[in-house]
Image 1 (cartoon, helix red, strand yellow):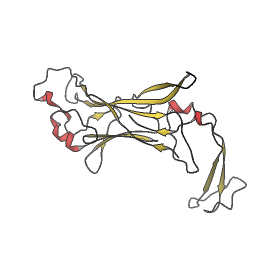
Image 2 (cartoon, rainbow, N blue to C red):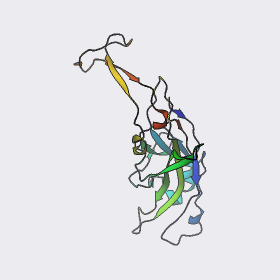
Image 3 (tube, helix red, strand yellow):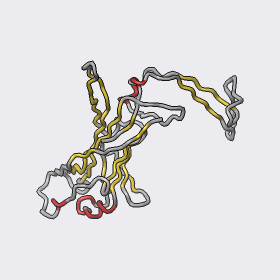
Image 4 (cartoon, rainbow, N blue to C red):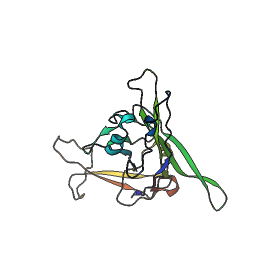
Length: 221
């Protein structure tokens, strides 16, 4: 089982622009974590949720929140049914111009090893939608930290699918069987030919992996 625990580490908002703004416009709020913005660091998805209240209070800058994005402007958000703007990075955490860093530690033999991978990105607002000169506001820097070891049990959660960790999974072996019934007692001995409405039951057995080669707890800073 992938154990998930979350702490969110934030950088101060850096508000920059190419224009001389008025005093009123300079009053944009630094978003408060847990109230204005929530960052969720999951095994398959990193999600940033911006509340409609924060967007409304800062509408002079943010309009309706349609131009919020991550470092890559193509990684924009979508509004959910509650009016939150939600930005997601799924499966490959190296997307959206994500900064990936190795966090090192030292063991009892004074040997250096990679203990975690830190994924850092920035919540931005593109303020140039109606201007000739590009302007971006850096609202919030956030990061998610994933330890390089992972404990698995008989019930498998999805793996942390990142380019950084794929090269670390070297010693995982197993086999897969295809079954005809939900009790997993009648298995196929040859590749089956199935109709569209047939149900295929799949059993996956994994040998005990080398713990140092795969991912353990998922934490976020």
